[in-house]
Picture 1 (cartoon, rainbow, N blue to C red):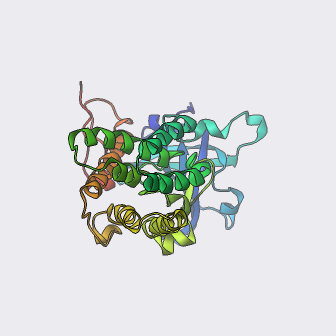
Picture 2 (picture 1 turned 90 degrees about the vertical axis):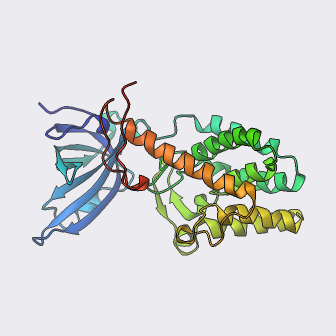
Picture 3 (picture 1 turned 180 degrees about the vertical axis):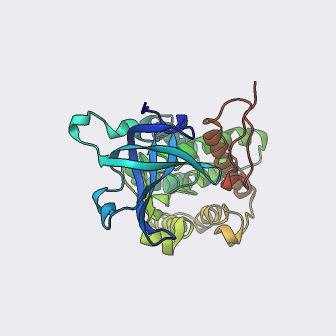
Length: 316
């Protein structure tokens, strides 16, 4: 019997059918010189790689990226990961009665609620120039923030993921500023709010949160774009050069290592905290995301973003 299951429920050997969002489709050539389609399918619970073997030339053009499709196939295991061999697929039609929003991976908090809380942190900034720069950039970014992911495929690569990432970092930063009381909270909050803000230009995302890198994103990256934005807004507002420089340093140094895009390591305490708060939230998100799909007492598959560690889900 063919079952309708969410991706989280798939097991090797299952025959399944259901509706999924097509995040990626690409025609490729197999080792025996036959065309096949390489797919990334997603629903609210996760993603899975799919294959359509012996695909006709041009078949990929029939299925727009970001569309909802109905799929029938067989779940198998390939190199330790589940994979879906697709036997039948078609684009969903109105008569199916399906709403694509019901299949979108999204932040667990409503976008409007997250923005309201984030903006409360903007209001906590006391220095008028720091606050002015942050307020201008955040408000100008509001429309895209409501649905933008924080990445194409890594942590927080979900609808409204960028805001979810920023919000959890702000909450963490506020708690740490109560421990490290000499930290300048204005700089810390501003750094958290601005460190990834140019992801909205580095990526081109649709309202489902499905993203690809923009030309500017590939050539420049969100760090350099973020520094340019701070300079532009700061000068327009007549902000002190020291403030502009420190905010740029926060953004410039938050990846910590040159190979990850930061030519300078943090040289102020607020920058050091920003980097580690960023790392904490990214890693905790990845841990949460992988552990949710297994039962207590089981191990995850190796996770590339966590140095190929296999995580264990505790029994209590």
